[in-house]
Length: 604
Image (tube, rainbow, N blue to C red):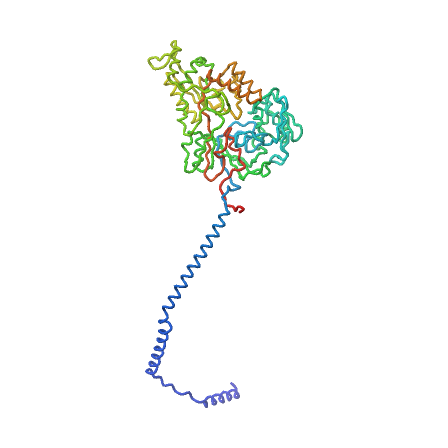
């Protein structure tokens, strides 16, 4: 520090020393305590005056506030409930769009080409992916599909059909009358080996893109029912050799024109032929797009597999179950519908059998058959079917089958020399009355076979039963007529033309007259009925045939068949109001099927 700085510092200190001194504070604890008590007393008086005395007022105010808060809350809640009720009054629950439907059916699926279909699964894919000129609607009547108008000439042998101009194949190509003519000519060609028959004597010609003409060699009253055949695309198959059509890649990757188109095929189990056909909605379908976005068709090889698929939630619906199989379905999870179809189960009698060529024996079996007792064995309500026609297909003087008369059946056998021996078996001229009764492998038919055999055994007849596996090609029992009696379902259809089952010309290896039935009166009635279009005349001819059929007993009608459909409760599909010609017609309302539901606003 310099001498100058040191001098300044001493000057400042000297000035501070001259400031006045602060007075000394003398702290007295008694005075402090006295003042504090005074402050405490003042505070207590103020608290008592402004808080304690007014506390009841605060509680009154608090109670009023709570009451008002509750009132306002109730008002808000009531307003909210009223708003919700108002909104709900304009809402409705409707089936949801864009769902995925998974249906189980019996397979296998060997081809997706519709002119070769055989199994239920193949028929289903054909219906969903391909179009026809006509189809059965949900009332069971023929209705237009591709066709818009049908004209018949004066001879009743030329049908001119107009078709829609807005139909396209799934690849976008326009569908024309040429495709229809192409398909019919394929079906007619024997080298193609189509499973569709009956077109041999019909010629077809495309007049223009939207007009097709069919010419018949003779009148055929039920011809329009034949126009339900599926139509193939000419532009894809025209260069394929007809005999190679079935083996062509089209059979595994088809192009159709129906409401759904193929997405892909999934093989789930090669050993059991289990496949899933994945289809997606055809957005450009001429009748409008379906509500469903996807349709999965699961093909199983056995009924047991279908029932297991339902139990494991692999599918949400199933077809092809018999009334007997429904006993194994969990009815808490699934809804089951039983709908009559235009088919019937018959005990078809081989009229050329060594024993049953005798009409009296056939009549004894007819009287000894208690059809009511057989129907009682089935869990579903089933209708009688005494005639070779579906109930109500004929009107007027319709004949009735003889009533069950066990004593009458015994008398017929006794009168014809068939006496009971010591073993309780009927015999004549040293030969026992022994019959072979066959049916195909089916839980329903096998139950009926057991019941029917029991009734006929009670008559004193030895019954040998035979179960035919339809998948075993070596068991050609039916076509060879290697039976005395065959329990079999005949598909009659919407028209009463049963020529194929009972005319003598069809009693061949290729025909379906499995009883080998032949009668001049019956043949004439069947032929006359199919070549006349007058409804009253046709009805009269069929009544004549029915009377002769009952007298000759080439078969015994047991009951009208039903189609069982199982589905979960959250889907909309085939319903109880639909009339089915066959089980496949459950799809007649396929555009409105849905999975799940949704809430939407409706216009006040």
